[in-house]
Image (tube, rainbow, N blue to C red; front, side, top):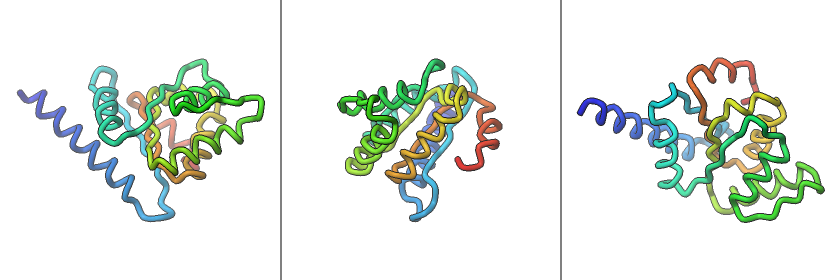
Length: 152
């Protein structure tokens, strides 16, 4: 029974943090980091929140490049990727979609984004252009790695 209560408290805290993110004052950054040990239910709780809020969920892969990450996001919103046009138009398409549809972007396994600093910068570009909330989900300890990224 105690385990179920902890899960409920965690989900409630997650929903509260998400609501604070969505209702933030103009000009306040809208990126959130959710981290925890493997097997603690992070992904399950995030999938629930994503479904409840009509969010958009993608998973960062260890082999991702800017093109592959943005292509995966574009495909998830039923947009045809056009990597031959460059990353800028791909970022703009995603940002316009998130802004118009008022959707949040959830990125699971964000630890994989550290393989290239450009990947994190692309997500920041999407955020800065759309002002849409972006929720990064990673393993315990990821917050220490994020501290080195002062712009996030």
